[in-house]
Image 1 (cartoon, rainbow, N blue to C red):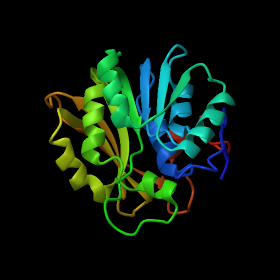
Image 2: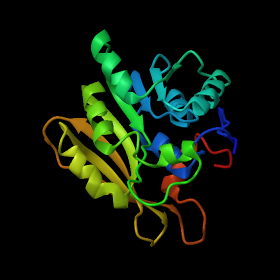
Image 3: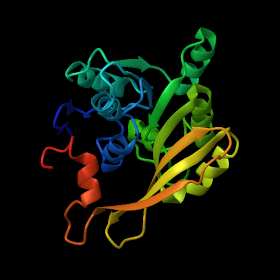
Image 4: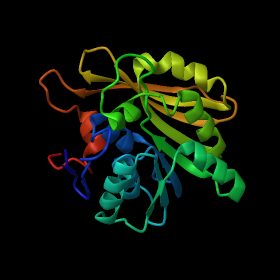
Amino acid sequence: MPFTFKQFHIDDSHCGMSVSTDGVLLGAWAPLAAARNILDIGAGSGLLSLMAAQRSHFDAKVTAIELDSAAVDDCQANIADSPWPEKVTLLHTSIQNYCLSFIQQSQTHYDHIICNPPYFTTGPQTQNIARATARHTNQLSFIELLSAIAQLLDERGTASLIIPIQSLTEFQLALAQTPLYISEYVAVSSVEGKVENRLLLALKQGEVSVPIIVSQMFIRNKQGHYSSKMIDLCRDFYLKL
């Protein structure tokens, strides 16, 4: 369903995954202010790419990678209609193929990588192939994703992701096979007082040199209103904030 933000509009009619609270939360939380070279893995409708374009320095560049042809059409249209068509470059390819070309062309590493990855490994899959691909790890497992991030991320860069909390163990097993580590995480619950059900993660390269920054937040209070933290994060995007 199309969604209008304060500075741009998203039409996700042909995408496997529609605009979600998870995506907006990740795009608003990721530390992008100082980033100049940003990569969005699995761009979908272009939501994270356009949030990154809005939040980053005026001369920053955003590269969006998307495999699904229908999503690419939506993404390209959303970029073209945004205030930043020259700031975002869309590539129709898989992250695996992009990594191969990256090696061959000796490109500049990214100082920020952002991704709302597929996370289901088991369970029933929808008959909608695009949605199944977007939600399940069939074509992009955690180890493939994290290996790609390790290859493409600058040694001083940061990668930002969001995952369901039930996927953390599998994510950590894959993470242990790479030179990446979790430098910060935020445990997020949907409603005040409820158990956290998703994690915002910041990853860095190399040995763990400082304590992990740990915090918590909830999206809505017990009265059903957005929390002050959610309002602070999303004020520049949601029309009614």
